[in-house]
Length: 586
Image (cartoon, rainbow, N blue to C red; front, side, top):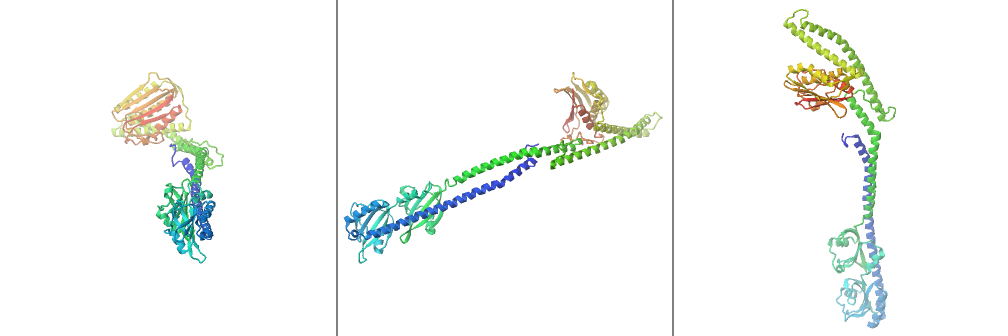
């Protein structure tokens, strides 16, 4: 029996237990992916909120700068063009507003006359677009990314026109906004590690990249498609490859600089490690699920063996014994249980008992009929023998031919009735072995002598190979002679002319005598070997019409050998002969 087969009951019970865990597995996996989607949605929301918060903070700072510049444009020293006094005022103001790199004032000609940071020489800003726009349009202006002329640091210029009492443009005041405030903002927002923050103008020029290399500043964002999405949607969340090469969720928002949306901020949350907690929880849940599966398999294995398979295997064994003709087969299971298997075992035992009872009644009836047939058959056999031998007078050859046929068939019928009677007695247990100390050598030699003439007629060599020191055994010599007669008769029957038959016996190691009858006959096919010791079974291997029998001889041999406490078996190969072995206790 194979240890595991998908067709076995145990494997089906295990599969049933496994299938019972599948919903839990499906739920665990589904919950895992739901958690991943939830993390992504939450991270997107946080990225967008962070971008919006930076944009609002920048808007507030720009508005504060505008109001500050409006106030500076009204200062008398600025409007009067008093450079020294104006520079001192602005220098004091710069110490209070650390986010700015410089405060300065410019004449309408573009000449710098007032600066909180002392310039290294005369500076003209007439060619700067932000100055031209502030003076020409007379409005608040936010520049693009520039390097301060006085401070020399990257910044954004915020400018406001200075008007005289008649509303004529006298020049402009401006402030250089430091871009380092973005770093301060990331600390304020408590953004997770790996978060990137980028500030860019509408041309895609990077004003701030945190964290990131300084050489990015002033350069165009390399991902044209990404910046196109930012320009088109103004606000939202997308995915991109971050500076470290890992994917990130990118929240972006446009910044209102004065009246126009000229700047954009993006906040990127790295997706590396984003699902660390979810993955850790999934591994923990999956590990517990594996433990549950193993526990279910173990419990199913043990429980199925204790409560199902033992009963089923017992029933199967009893059924197989019954199938090969052992009507004494019983399950031996409790018959008072209320379970289905207990009731099945009880029904089987009752069925087997009924079959055994019916078989006994049949055997008794058969034995009675056969016994009644033996007396007239004996009389007919005797009469046919007297007629054939001419004891009541001479008979013609034609008459002898018919009396010989009568004699042969009545003898065969008499042998058949004797076999039936022996089988009936053995099966019913009414036969008593008359055991005595038996020397096997004379018993075997006597059997060889009985069949010597028949073997000679077929030109078959009949030989014995016996150990010189065979111990005596307790056995019924008449029944042993019956075993040897059946085995030798079959061997001669199925061995062709010129064949060899050997009868041997040896003292085995386990206090038993091993005996064999070996022939060089037609042999038995592998598919028929298991049927040899069944009633009325006769082999078809090499069979001819002259080889007739009842199919009971080997069954009787098996019963006699087993009644002595031995066992019998056969080894054969079709076309190469057959060997019958049996053992007897020493």
